[in-house]
Amino acid sequence: MQKTNIRQQTILDILKAGPVYSQDELSQRLQETGIQTTQATLSRDLKALKISKVPGEGYVLPAPHAVQPPAADLPGGVVSIEFSGTLAVIKTQPGFANAIAFLIDHRAVQPVIGTVAGDDTVLAVLRTGVTPGQALEALSTIIPDIKQRQKYGI
Image 1 (tube, helix red, strand yellow):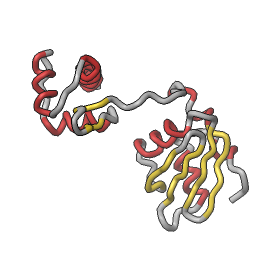
Image 2 (cartoon, rainbow, N blue to C red):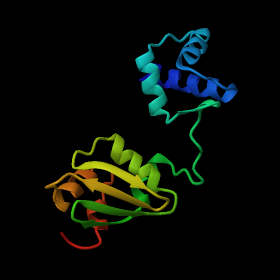
Image 3 (cartoon, one colour):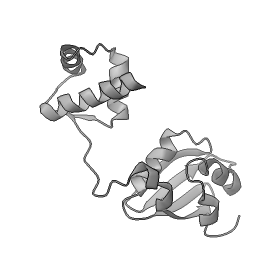
């Protein structure tokens, strides 16, 4: 994990210093700092860092959110959850929705296929046949008190 953090921080530093137009160029710049990596690892790092490639601009850092809540505060940012069929609508405090959706998507909450987030709302799409109770149980691994925030009973 330590090597991953160092490598990813170095990638961020390189991209902040100036434009990079290809993975080969980024790999070469990493080598110049003493970091050897494979193309597959570099691709995973770029995806994990949410770095995208823009034609004519090269790799660009993700835009910072207006409000970036600390990770420890994320579960407390959830206001309520309500279910409708295979959908769960999670209301959050302003600025928390993207981070909550990211956690749900990247912690592989099995009952959830995926999420869409706005500023204060997350739409979670549940797998067919998943009950609200099963979804709440799975989500409670990320948001411990989510069951108490359910708007209407199961």
